[in-house]
Image 1 (cartoon, rainbow, N blue to C red):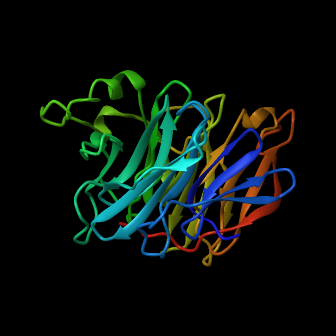
Image 2 (cartoon, rainbow, N blue to C red):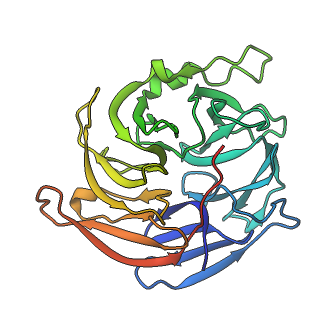
Length: 312
């Protein structure tokens, strides 16, 4: 089953969006179940941003599917497990990535229709009121990349750049909370910038996938076309300038390292799932336990995966 964009794992099940439809996969057996789709999905069919599950949203959990319709419009659809029903589509400008925390959906992408070039990307809190008050939280600049939150509500992001290098940033939950909910009452939308975040590491290539495990370990994927570089890295816990990461894997020219997700502590044996190749599978990576330095075990692919993502 081909998958599009970001995905999530929860209690041994992978949740993803493919071909304008929601499916789950048993991560131990590979068995796929199709959940279905809302009526009249607004998607151009060339690759949607993500499909992610949030166990904390609603009485029985909620699945969010984000679609790409055209150069100025994306939609988010909600599937409520309690009622077994889909919501209408909630409109936004171009979405790229998403993550959930405390029942809320956080998105990365554009806030104005794309007109070419780079630099107008933000991380925003999605508004499901129907008023379109998607609250800008962080101006990231660069081109689009995925976003992640940890169990404390801290936000992590690596901008995609074309310069050959980027950096991993973290914004505290307290700082982010200070710029939340300043739109609904008609106030000016205030937001943080890269300068307000803590730089954790320099990185080679431009950022793409990112996830944080239960112990606070941060994993990122980066890509660079010329010279060709595609890598998977784990932050080593040291913050600041410099290469503060362990390289877990890299690839050649015909790959594109994409979204990631994990549940549990990687160093305790919980697997990291990610997309590491053009039209390749979702791959499982585990750590030897106890973990020797840079001892990663590459597992088999579970799902047929994405082609090259839009980069705006």
